[in-house]
Length: 354
Ligand code: CP
Image (cartoon, rainbow, N blue to C red; front, top):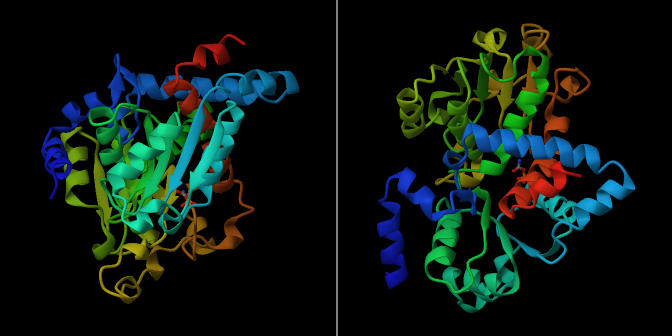
């Protein structure tokens, strides 16, 4: 353990509310590391920016205006764990607001392969860029990056967490809530709805980040449907209890609960986190797949979501069903992420005023 390891270990003992202060500037979002940083006011602002940015970018003049927001800034995409959607949508988002991008997608092609530490690598990236968007296979590495640059760097740049281990994926949660709010726009938004989350809840970072955001909405209910060994972790259930968000746990099968849901959020088995080879394949997941049989019980105005990638947990036969929202959900990612970047760099007024 070096001195930075010791200092970071101390930082990690702080209550969440204290840690969050490290990720702000003048009370404004600077780094985005965990969903708990986002309150309703910030979410609504980001969604308003998203709407305006998306609508106004449809014309050539509007798109050029947006590309002039941040042409003097550079973003780095440091994705040491595989990604299609988060990587591509963030790259697209940077381009929408005029940022130039660079990338490292494999630590075998950075100097980490020569023994450079993670901390030195991050400080090096911040020498050349104005924003680091990152994904990492381990849970605390985005938090460490933001803490390090804010505390032990002469060039602190914002860090946005594009997925950290099995812990959090806050920008996925932003786009998921946006999708829910837009889908229920004529029915009072997400308030009062029942959200069913299904799949590998124990190791799925998207369901964790999404669950944290539920405290920003009124009368929301959650159903966690998964085999016992993939059920939601106790710390997240405790968070829901503390925040008086009702949830129920279903371990027998999706059939028992599909009819109750306004939104069904499916996830794949996260077997990249297996600690023993083949661990996940020993669990019978078949009762937690969504097919035509289950869809017959689903409310006619419910929506089906999935952060993707999917395997067999949603039958492709469902894709033409108007309740299947996952492709639209995926597209929402680029626009909400562009809005987030504009918000972090405080140029969003130039979008709203245009
Ligand atoms: N939803 C999501 O994070 O997808 P990718 O892993 O492809 O980025």
